[in-house]
Length: 344
Ligand code: KG4
Ligand code: ZN
Image 1: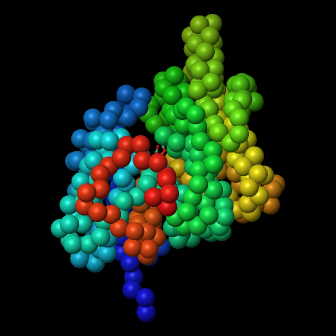
Image 2 (image 1 turned 120 degrees about the horizontal axis):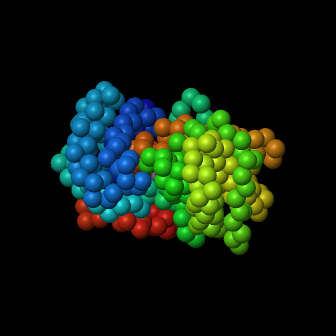
Image 3 (image 1 turned 60 degrees about the vertical axis):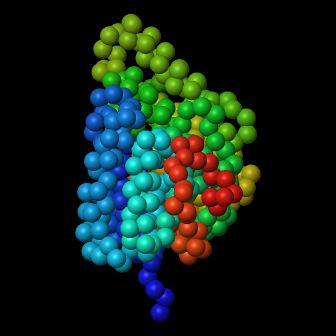
């Protein structure tokens, strides 16, 4: 009988400290310590994030091992996020993982955070079926907006990307303008539920090929609010739901325009969505409808595996472990870590 492979995954690229334990392609534990310290700043404060990671990492790892009901000595390898992300935050997870792997005398596996978002599709969970290769994955997060052609478990090519802001940033910055707390994406989603998405119109980005740009939309939103508040100081409070629904619709349509173009160009039968913005209820609904309209098999991971989590790091570690893609102790964190051939 094949031996079970147990991986400890560690994620610390931004403001969530997360640890997960996988057993083959199943997740036994996935713990996330969020950092409330940033909520009133309208964005992540890097120095506060790394300090909070230092405080959180030990208890989170300890708790993950307890929840998974395993002994430390059963862990076969430690997988960690090498990048991209905030350098100070990445350093905490990287140093911790290197020390733990050395102490336990087990392999160390470095993981690209964006590749891990895509790999979250391969976590066995009751609700979703994994997409078949090749598939196109719309990867939408706070730092990235990408269309990824997934050829095999660890073989991917980014075929479209944002030229400026990520779509998650476009959600968060608009939320800040609306005086909502960080991260604003989930709050815009919440307020949009009771709003009319046709109440206001925002310009559609006009960018060549499969690339994205959200800075124009964001600026249009800023001016729209500024002008309306000038005429009516209570404009935001009076129309919050309609503003959120209309803006959310514009962002989701902009994201899906290019995704549809890529689907037609690459003629795939399976599609997926990953990253924090994949938690957005309107995007999830639109992608499911799009799948029906175009007869595509759609796979969207459960929300806990869309927003930053270590389960996706552990699952990537599991696939790398099988190919013995281990890292050396000299490996360092990389804030701008790209998905290049070396990571495939
Ligand atoms: O993947 P993620 O957790 O972290 C990064 O790698 O960046 O993505 C975080 C982003 C934030 O911009 C957050 O506002 C957005 O995902 N987000 C959402 C929702 N939940 C999280 N955006 C819109 N609707 C949501 N429900
Ligand atoms: Zn992420």
